[in-house]
Length: 131
Image (tube, rainbow, N blue to C red; front, top):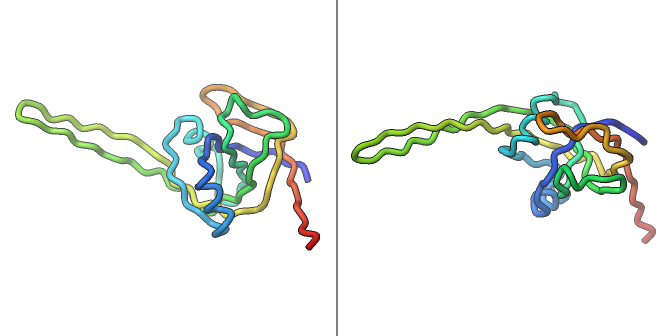
């Protein structure tokens, strides 16, 4: 089955393994490209997760198909102070709860531009155990 979906790239192998094991996982996304990708998605959308970085995604790249259960944008505030200074910094992150749908393989990269989400044409891949 072919589908078009946004990709979250550079996701670590242990995170993908935990998602496979438990079927559900909440990620906190701070990388700019993945953060922008999540701003373009809604609960119920299918997202492709891969270990590969954006520029390394080509036809045949494997990953996981997941469904967005919930998205939340959070703001972190960091305060640094000393005897003669006080500094506040804020950063934003997106927390996304994902539910596993299955395995996928990239058919074609549709969009890979800085400042916009990575959009892929992905095939759902079925693995059968003949045991």
